Image (cartoon, rainbow, N blue to C red; front, side, top):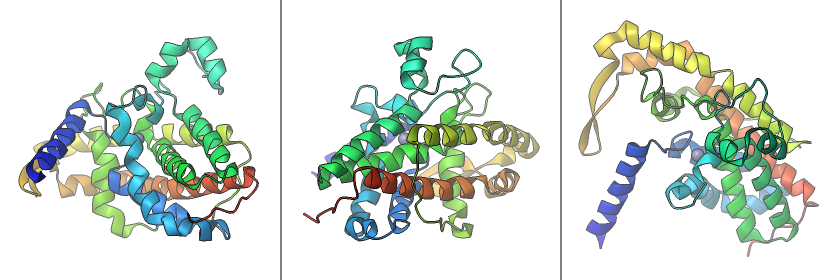
Length: 290
Ligand SMILES: [Zn+2]
């Protein structure tokens, strides 16, 4: 029944907006990352995976869609580095749980460990030459690694809600990529073998976190300079929405100095490299088409 479908789709969109539980990167970017990561694979893996590029792209956002139905899915997409008490966070999950308790660790997010866990499951699925499971885990790993490149997924102030900057999350991850994708060079280097996946996940997250101050600071500065001209009413589909104005976005994008493009491109090569590494760790199995 189309009308029912339509209303349930609308309901889930409204739910997403109401709860603020979007993914890092807009859906279109996640889909692009998984697709481009396929093309960055070397042969023979490229040949095995290429026929599934559409599937991997389409399912790049499954992990976000699960957030409302799967218990504990949401904390797998972020880590609030600045909310965890103390100066340094243990790099291992066991160490973090021992120091902060299980509940605190899950409250502030488990993204670096989730990347490691999904990776381990992918190595196992590759080893068993279980194509369906391998593809599912590749799609998820691509999603989590993409999330790790988004600065606002590493802070408790993930939507500027603590500093009167609500909406900065969607601005950075969806609005800017939407407006400026055409200007970006998203050709990433080829996949490289990653020795230590947990270290790699942490380096990626620590690097993203360094951008938090600029993401929030520049938004504040430019919002103040633009005043009411920060926003404009724009037609989106059949509705009118209040969105950031083009001149505001342009100024903010310039102030960020290529950050969105760089983190997007970085996501592609990181995803490709981790897929490739998992396949190497699994003993470079042949992945049959059926
Ligand atoms: Zn996500």
